[in-house]
Image (cartoon, rainbow over all chains, first blue to last red; front, side, top):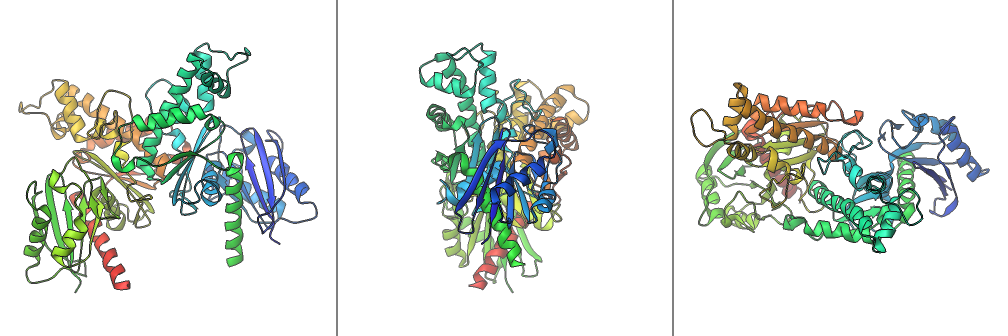
Length: 307
Length: 307
């Protein structure tokens, strides 16, 4: 039996699932992403604890970008602590687990997961956009990640949509992430002096809920973010010509946000050829990335068996 | 001997070249792009006149976007007269010439030409940007055009870089083409009340020449356009991760424009992984597209022989 470990290292939580060759989920664990100590050893211990007596045959890691999938290095993701930066995780984790390990950007694996098992299953060119703390994007083409010349392609969250003075975590002004992510929505609410009914610090979820309940100030904030994302999606259609666009992440769970975003896409003057591409919610929810990570691990296993 | 006709239909001029199997250029003609009558018949007659007694084995047509390469239809390019719109050129020209005919967007063929025979020869992911009347872009990946799900990908000239009130020919506000093309430069000069020394209506070339000669107003106009293109190029790097960016078209012939654009790229806050991608002038000049068109025709010939 081939045993596969799929490891999704997120900015807040890390999720590990173990699958059998028959793709049966054997066991899973979710824990706070380690922010100190030997983080690779922590991952290996969690895998070994799940696996018990069994040995992994292959593993794959999803990490927030930027990461270098070719060299197997997590570069410098702003949402991970310094322990993760410039970490040669495929080599190190591979030694600890005694099996091949692959690394990919989490949004690329979200695209792969949705393309193989989710809402992109019937489509050839699947653009996946996760809207949560940040905005990550990935393109899957006929079941393969479009990685560009070095595996860095698909960083559309850091393409710009405005010249307004909204500075992104990446340092640029007016990135999609700086105006349409959950963080951006919460920040705009804070700047506008808006508070949720409970008086706590504003979050994107609180803004979306209040907007849906008729709060005009919240609606304005949510509309701005959704409109920028809609305009950005037209840019993305022009770049990639996907046949489906799938939205994942916490913010995309708001029906109102999706409606506002779709309205912005419809209102944007657009070449007729690009009209009508479906823009849908991703089907696998929080597990888009885990499914893509498993798919990546299976590709690696198939390749090493082919040798 | 396999005879190949490469036909580059431009907004102003049409260039046809005939090549032998040995890729030897046998004959060429350049004429004003027809704007009335049966335009396909005009192309066929020009090919036949060049060919004399000989019969073509395959032909390929480069047309301004948008075009549908899969169905072989020129859609509705603003720079071509209505006679070309919705024209099933591959079927019609194929009947007239009695050979298979392929169609592609001209900027995509520029990318293919430079990738196969030009400055992109040593690179795997070649982003070609032509800056002239409009801005066209194409991506060649390992010698193949990246077309997306339906052949429409790579319309980066119509992605946006500003919310300023610069309306593009496509109807959108703030497209790269609306702020960085030759037309945009000439229009900004006109709006600024700038005239070239000869007193004629401003052109992008006149602005670039005056800027190089020290005219401050002209320099300001050229700098704005080049700066927007530089910022846009960072967006393009994030989307495609090319290993080289090649600039063709009239405006890119200005050394000052290229310098200003490169300065804008360097000044833009950018993820370190994307720094240092070479941004160069295309090597084949006016013939990037013709070389790509020949390469496309050869692919079609190889496929029909393979059947």
